[in-house]
Image (cartoon, rainbow, N blue to C red):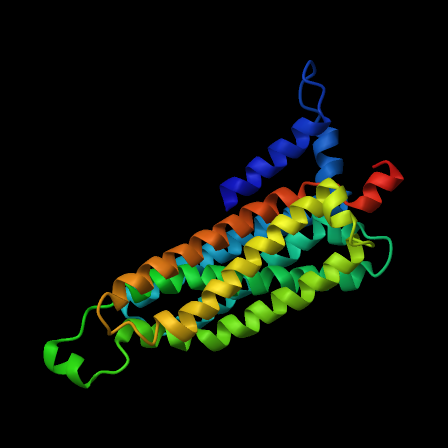
Amino acid sequence: MIIATLFRLAAQLYAFYDPNEGPDVDLIRSMVMQTVWGWGWLLQFVSALVTTCGLHFVKARLHDGTPGAKIPWFFACGGAVGLALSCALSGHAAAVAQYAPLAVLADTLHVLGAGAWLGGLAVLTNVAFRVRPAAPAEAAAESPSRSSALLMSFTPVALIAASTVAVTGAFATWLHVHDFSQLVSTPYGIRLSAKLIAVASVAALGALNWRWFTPRESRTNGARNLRIAAALEVGLGALALLATAILVATATPDDLVSGE
């Protein structure tokens, strides 16, 4: 993420530079220090460093067995919140004419919810399928399996995170799309519709995994079906993130009207 943040700055500078001229140090300084985008970029860079260092010390302490792993976890979590806030400061939320503070807060919660839901799902799925199979004697008395129990334990987190994504996403849609026709008549609306379809597909498949595939993991081919369904859910989540990346670089209908 640190590398991606540096590339973001390079791409932003390239958009302002004359290709025939060399870099302008004053332009770089003013862009980073005197614009909302620059403040968001600085926050993202610092938060990425804090998160990386926090996770590094967590790993080191867990590996060595030394106490006090909770403290670096706090730094890592604080950095994650900063990363979510930085996305709001450098996106459409910071540019709305009205309700800008509320829009930034909602967008921050939206990113945190998406990270907890999709990011947590990707990590947890990877961990669940690496859990050591139970011994035959243990498996006979074990219901559900370790993998399915681990996935089921994530359900409350996923429900809260997905609900947060839905509520904050609906608020952002209300801010930027003022007519349903704009969902099919503007580039922003079309790409937003694609994102909504991807997110709805992830939610639907997640509900199917929760109610159908996970409880039936112990049946014939149940584990294989659960793996396929979980992998598909993670893949759809990646498509939703890709759609979001395209969406945040697209002018909103209000921007088109104002000529920005």
